[in-house]
Amino acid sequence: MGVAVVVIVVVVVFVLFYSKLSELSSLCCQVMKLRQAKNELERKVQDQEEELDEQAGTIQQLEQVLVLCFALR
Image 1 (cartoon, rainbow, N blue to C red):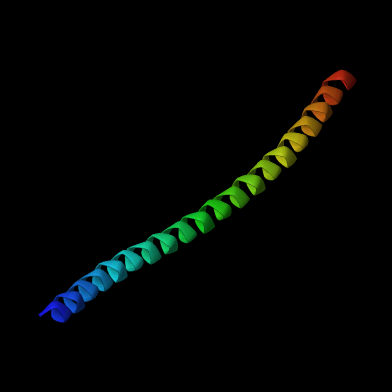
Image 2 (image 1 turned 180 degrees about the horizontal axis):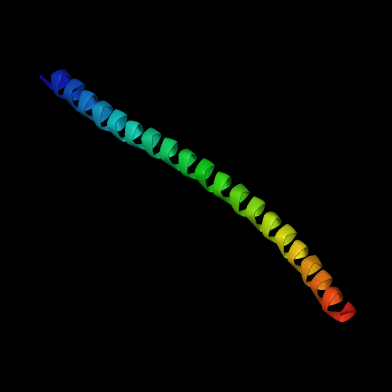
């Protein structure tokens, strides 16, 4: 009877361990997906910041042309 109890305890511990291991694996996958999404969003933000800088430069050039046009009148 003692061996049967030990076997049952080992099986229960194994099942609990496997369950927690599966949860951990799932959490790791979620973390990895979130990191990938975060990196993608950071790249998009950087691209948009660069585009805004370019647009600000264009606006500044257009304002200078506009000032020159009014000055020449």
